[in-house]
Structure formats: C-alpha cells, structure tokens
Image 1 (cartoon, rainbow, N blue to C red):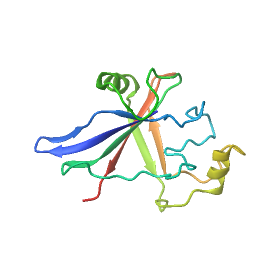
Image 2 (image 1 turned 135 degrees about the vertical axis):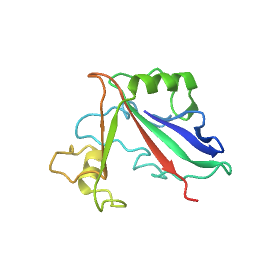
Image 3 (image 1 turned 90 degrees about the horizontal axis):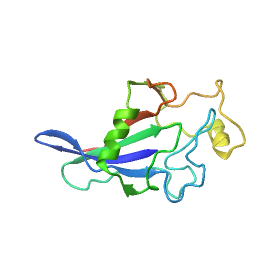
Image 4 (image 1 turned 90 degrees about the vertical axis):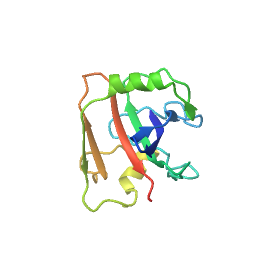
Length: 159
C-alpha cells in the first residue's frame, strides 16, 4: 500500500496533510499489489502513461509530499486508491506497522536507467536474484515476525 500526504511548513514547523491512498488504485489489476521474493512492484507502474510523479505546490507553504509504503502479510481494510483515508486509520497503521528503519544508498546510481533484469522481472519472464544489480536504495525495517512494515519516503519540492 502507498499513502500520500502533503507536507506543509509554517511558523510552528512541518505538519502533514490528510492521508490519501494512492496504491492500490482503481486500475491496479487483481493481485497487482501482491509482492513476493524476486518480483518488482513499481509505483507508479512502468506501463502507466506517466510512469513518474510530478510534484506541484498547492500553496506557498506546501514544501513536499510524504509517501508512506506499507507492506502487510494480509490485506488492510481500506477502500481502493485515490481516496481520502480516515486519519485515525492512518495513525493506527503507523502504530502497528511502524518500526526502526534503515536505508542504504548505492553510490553513483541516482538517475540510472531501469535495468534489463528489472524489466524482465516486471514483465514476469524471470525473478530478480542476488547476483542482479542492486537497486538504488535498500530499506531494512525492524518489525515483529509476521507483522506489517511501514517506510516513510519524504519527497521535497525544490524551492
């Protein structure tokens, strides 16, 4: 699951806007949000007409977006994409799924093209294996065994 929240900055610091579920969406095929070892899931999908995010300010104090990726072993009770989420539901997911998160960045990989191996895995003709090129960023989340995991991904709008 991917939840989007606008980030605002004012004289009291930063605050988050209302949560909105952006993945899975109405066009996500059945099982399109199911992950397994060696399978890639792209948000937005590489096959989408616009396979990237465009950030635009909604006002002068809008400084970015906070994407929250949630990986859960069982479906979460929520409506399908593009709809506002109840803030209490989001707060519960953060309590239950949140944990210590570490990330590692690949040197010199920013802006790198989609690899042949990633493309083949996305098309379903193969799975990614340990000897394939590493992704740009790797996340490690400490959670309870069998529990869900949550990764916040801040995106800043350039001044």
